[in-house]
Image (cartoon, rainbow, N blue to C red; front, side, top):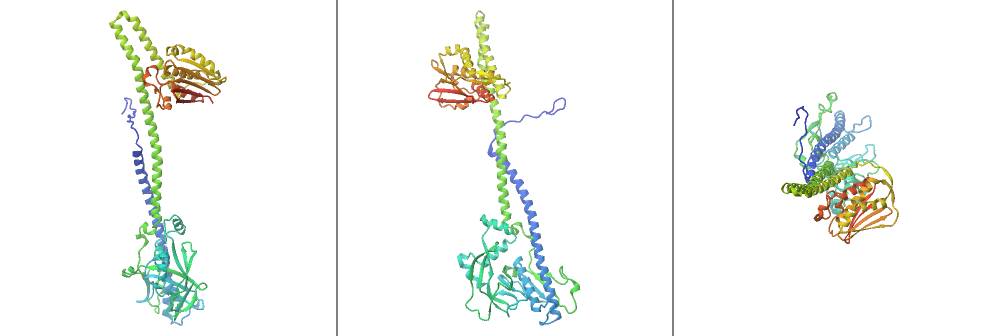
Length: 558
């Protein structure tokens, strides 16, 4: 909407009572949407960075295999089994290095791989569970890499303590959670979000140097990922004929467990490395070198979902961010609801105030209208009716004066001028002012002075406060009863007999609230509201009490 001069006038908005559930629902929807977008973006970034790490690790293993395979291919092409290179490594040592790299590839990637010279397979990762112990090439005996003869030799651990240390299942799970950092996984265990896992460290084994297989001896069950020893177990079989007992502590440089899913046997192999490949070099090919390659199943990490790469962290992030979104939505909605509730309370207050003023002003206005009509019909009584009209006008003026006084007190617009005020004198002066009203209602006023009460305050506001308290006694005390005023150090108490019951006395501090609606013509319901505001302005407090048929309004001056 625009005025004639072109300025925009804001349209009025309808004020509605706020509903917390609706506010919370709207806020929650917004917060969850924002949280979902941010979480999704973070997890996408986390997925790419984690996949890159796995990708680099994957090709690092391929580089190692390619290096060992080229070296072995060169050695096998130049010489026979008596070959010793410049570093004192034999052909057997080279094949051991290659096998170690191939086994390690399967353990860290979960993929099946095989090394070839021409079409001859010379090393491969086993399917299913496997365990590998590698000894230093410079050790006396044994030398090379040894593979567990059969996974059945660790079968006793699959049932020990309900399968808690089952090496097959634990190895599978370790591979599943391998991309979770050790610190994160340890914290997830403490929070009971991840299972406790273990792995095997062979303390002693029985080796066959011809087949490069071993039988189990003593094994340590190690904690994952901390690495502490949980238990020790002896898996030595009854028959170790043809095998030599070896302790692994001194010369074994690799003691690992791996698992390759047997279903990968059905998957096609890809040529990962060859002389012409990414990690090979045509210049390495000489006439006496045979063709070589490494082939493997492959699932690039780029094709894996975040729930495969970080199975726990991804879900923890969603739960955490969802809870944060709910908490933020709750805080925002509570604040927003309180703001709207405050606006609604002001609206209701103004509405109630307007209705109360209209109701209170309607009575004298109706009386004035009635007396004006009577004057027209009975001119001879105009003097009487004119007096009645003046009485009602006076009542309206007093009412409006009270409304203005309340408005000033509520808005803190009064100017404070402090001086020494004798409260007893103020009370006696005010009692004299309302003497006719007390006499009319047959109320006997008694003042009980316990101590002198001289305070430094604003005399006008204190006088207005005492007038309203005494006026309240005169209007609402039971006719023919007694009104008592107690003057104490730091407290003024005004008590009167009343028939009120079941009333929330604190509500009487609100404007236009009357304790006795049946006698509402005697006042506006603003007296105690003005008293409450004035005392707050002066730094004091109003206390109300209804007990045993006595209503007491106390001004606490300390």
